[in-house]
Amino acid sequence: MIQYLDNIQHKNSTNFFLIAGPCIIEGEEMAMKIAEKIIEITNKYKIPYIFKGSFKKANRSRVDSFTTIGEEKSLEILRKVGETFNIPTTTDIHENEHAALAANYVDVLQIPAFLVRQTDLLIAAAKTGKCVSLKKGQFLSPESMQFAVQKVQDSGNPKTAIIERGNSFGYTDLVVDFRGIPTMRNYSPVILDVTHSLQQPNQSSGVTGGRPELIETIAKAGIAVGADGLFIETHPDPSCALSDGANMLQLDKLEDLLQKLTRVREAIL
View (cartoon, rainbow, N blue to C red):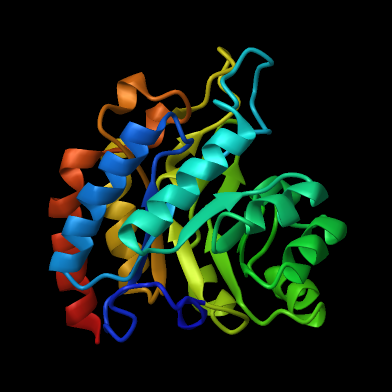
């Protein structure tokens, strides 16, 4: 996928690429600070980087959960991040109409896991001509993702990637089957969504839990089995985050993690 992004840095690096940022856009100042810090780190380790932030969250557990500071406002912030730092940006879309809207502001459209079988949504994303990253549903096998990729590519868009984010394990947990990463690489580049794969959904409180203490473990395993990229949500203070704080990585821990992962990558090449 990154070969299609003209504004990505370190495109010829042998390192993995990184999609990272806050779960949701909370405001311009925070988004800019997070992007600036991550760019400083990724430049140091020659990691191709895509800034991520949701402009709106649609699949919340409760009706009173935070969803957006405003759709247009969030998308404008994503555009400003991209233009200010000359980096690609990505956001997730949930409705067919969101595809054309978000495509005016970002470089990569992300299809959420719960919606990856929605044919019309995938076609709408494909028709924008933007890169399309497809999150594997928690309910899908690795082999079934070839058909999601095919929907986008058959719509005339070869710019795809698959995001692995674990499979449902019981009612309130997820587990990553690392055998699926080499399988899905037969269909498209594969990104391991480290932080979402450590979610603990469907908690009795209606607020998703998580196990961020395992971020390093899961990330190392993903690189070791050949993931092309990693997806890590990060925040200066996850305890105060407006969405998914329970499984995000604290921003000041990111450099140490990426340094270790770069060494793992070097060891397997």
